[in-house]
Length: 333
Ligand code: SAM
Ligand code: SF4
Image (cartoon, rainbow, N blue to C red; front, side):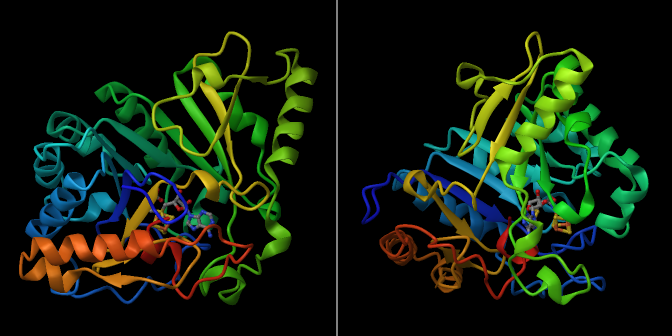
């Protein structure tokens, strides 16, 4: 499947719910989002129909996200159902990790291949400040559970925010002794939650990846473990738009994802499906196409039409527009 700019579209990010067991300050308001009603979110049979039509059209990889995808009831069965769809080669998950100790083994058995765990800080107090309700140890336990269950690769995503003053080197070092792929992602001031909710964060809080890498290198050299080396050959599966580096002798890698300082729109291969059945061509745009009505009636031809519409309307790039009306918990990050 090619879009009108010649890009192959073979990846779909699916938000399973807008609910979450955290309330991250940059993602949703303190009281949470007004949750979608049960009938507003796509049912499992509808999701399976959409993915199977998309697979016939060339989608090979799907990522489950949210909200927190693991709070959606029955998610293990859903993974198994996706795994049985011909043409789907790779299923991955983005999670805050809290439910992994309970669910990792079942998810692995159902056919989930890889997980990305979000972790922005290794300071317990700052972790609770950012997530509003979370405990650092729960997410660290989730990382252990993911390694133990045999997911490969296990990636850790940290959003970099200037006001948080994170210790980037401490993070990067987690890739040294364990096969962990640490990735730094530039904060994206999107949705109402950016600035409007008391975080006061905005464009000034974007820490360019280049600066993060320089700060890691300076600390690494001071500690005598040497600067990061480019490591494209160690790129983990599904590496996406990240640029990869590693410390000499490390088991894992350190990646940088720079949606703002270095656009990767020209290699964009994805569509996004919101929990309420909106197919979105681009993270940074408010444009969407309703696929729920087609899915409700199991109208596969109409589902294919909506997928084609979304692909046909993928913009060439985001042109530095980073504001949307919806927060990340609704878009799926
Ligand atoms: N709950 C899951 C989690 O936190 O991994 C999945 C959904 S969450 C919306 C997906 C990712 O989006 C997380 O890694 C989160 O840090 C990131 N995210 C949320 N708001 C963001 C923002 N304004 N800028 C950059 N990343 C953001
Ligand atoms: Fe929940 Fe993930 Fe948003 Fe945090 S970033 S509130 S864990 S959906």
